[in-house]
Amino acid sequence: MSDILVVEDEAIIRTALKRLLERHHYQVAEAGSVSEACERHNLDNFDLIISDLRLPGEPGTELIRRAANTPVLIMTSYASLRSAVDSMKLGAVDYIAKPFSLRLLLARIRAILRRSGGDHPLLLSEQFDDKPGEVLERGRLFMDPARHHVTWEGEPVSLTVTEFLLLEALAARPGVIKSRNQLMDAAYPDDVFVDDRTVDSHIKRMRRKFRSVDQGFSAIETLYGAGYSFNEG
Image 1 (cartoon, rainbow, N blue to C red):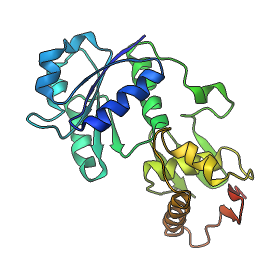
Image 2 (image 1 turned 30 degrees about the horizontal axis):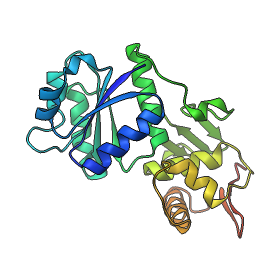
Image 3 (image 1 turned 30 degrees about the vertical axis):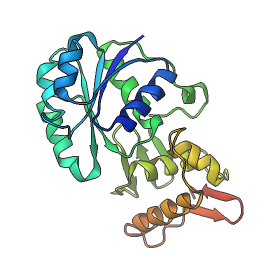
């Protein structure tokens, strides 16, 4: 079983991450700052450190230097993505932008531990046929979950994490109608509650992004009263 250290100054987020990871059979310790992490724990005893980028005192990137033998996954806001990329130049193994889904975080953790030889419990979603992380090609759509990369007719389309997960859920089974509740389950962690109309807003923005590449984009279909489906034709 892998040991993970979560370093996050917001107690609510830190506690939620700890509980969620423990539910997926990871052993989790926590700290609110770099100094607290170093005072309370031997960083080299962990298989992975997940740290917010902006922390009181020293930034999360300082853990990269102090934990030379432990991979560090940086968490950051979309506004700080440039800093997250810079952190990878310093030695972080990956980064993830807030807000993110638990499914995406677990997939990132599993990939890191696989590369480093750590233990990684089987994700619940991997018990089904639609395996996360595999490249999806549906007609003119190309999706690479490992790189969070989407193209339509070869042109890149920039999606948020939530939009990516919604589209992935639809494109995984073309023609199958997914209800708003099913889409919310695919895009949000178990303990995040959103109004079902939030899905409508995400779909609307996603369509607008695709239509900036292809004005005739109509692959995401609305089935009024039922939900949405993806038409690869």
